[in-house]
Length: 174
Length: 264
Image (cartoon, rainbow over all chains, first blue to last red; front, side):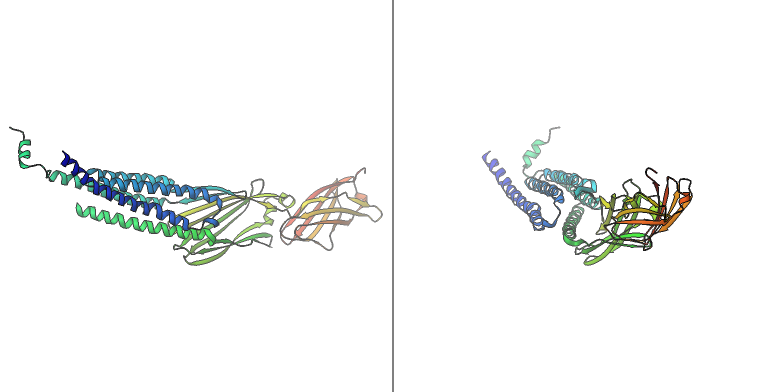
């Protein structure tokens, strides 16, 4: 019994370690790097009316970083199991929804008033959104193929730790 | 299966890298445009052949990585009653990356059309015009952007507060004197000829005259004139009307005002 627990800890520790490493890398790539890039842009020349718009998108970048970090950790923790593929599929679907929400269906609008004049800015990003959706669908397809491949391999390979006697004993008598 | 998964994995990775690079370069280019890439010059006002033209010079310094295409600026000006006065469009087909394009958006207001469109009240009354500006462009050929601005623009009438004072008749010299005043609140000078006809209440012409030296009122100046004309005192009645004809280099207009002799 104690031997089995040790094996579980031994099994889980590298995964946890890998998950932590992946979490840190993802945190750096999707949180620190964009924050650094944002801070590099000199914003003092940008009209203050744009401020709220940019802060809203700054928040969405952080949400994106959160999604990426969560799924990177979850995928690493569940590596070698079907859950890994389930998380990959979930990640692709969540990102799909996130992009549609963040880009407001591809049409971004900004209304503001400068010096008594009403200014309405419309950016049509539907082409860009279509590209993002396509790449996400590609990732979704890849994850699904991986899940199917994983399951088919599981079916083809019988469990390795079951002994011959146990296997024979498990066959019901006719 | 493994080959397909590998191919999909590589395709996804490559696409993500391309998208990330494209996004960063797009943001960089857009920031460059927002921070000094688009400049507006001093608007200039000119007039010729009855058309006043407001010229808005602007420059696009495209320091980014991508071309800007189909730049279109349209301006619609409406008077305080909502009547369309002018529509102007400026189109720049392409601003290649790394180049600076200087253009001017010309907003033309034909003062002669004020008469033909029955908008002569605009010559005599100041007010606010509503200005609608629509600007559109395509960034990197795939991102269409549209900006619409609703603003108001003060309109200075060239003959603001146009008024005729009390008409007086000199029966001995058979002469009529009419005080006239107005203020030129428009951005251009009003210079030309002013002539007038005086009618009695039966519609008979009793006299006519003009300002011999012509009129010349600079922008933002108020002028008073004493119009004098010989009249036929035998046809004189207690009241009547005066028909004024003003012909300037940018517009021609006629105005009818009534006159009457107080206690006459």
